[in-house]
Image (cartoon, rainbow, N blue to C red; front, side, top):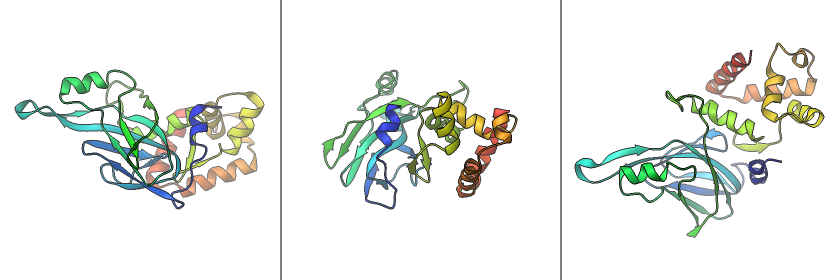
Length: 225
């Protein structure tokens, strides 16, 4: 089973015990557990247990006339929350050149602490599909990333894979991402005679989705044809 899914398996709902996530100035929290964050630059509540955030640096570095804003690619970062307050700081850099060097590799040194104690975390740069405006449709990229890792969220809460994915994966051993495509593509034989429970679950998820999420989902379905 994918280590990211195992790491997130204990995630609880936002309505349960929660901690406060506080990014330092110049750091943006873009997504929390698959959902767009309440505020990219202000403190917000996160659930206890394993949490996934998508973040990036938007920091002014340098001095005087040479100072300018460095914006990094977004990174998917996962850590376990057991305390009251989690703080995230940018990698310690003083110049634009240092920032470029820090983010040249795949593992920039974010400083994450919980109640004053350094917190272990896992990270991976969010994959993109284009060299021109690579993160323009970041919401779709986050969704596709989680599907590829076998991670599924429902309103910020980790859930089991959709029924169609669970059954198909057990029977064929095919990756979850490809099975989601099969389950939602109308031109496949499986989609013509789907399991009723799968259809009902997909309907329920669609009805729960926001207008923007429904738009992105329809666009994704068209791309599968």
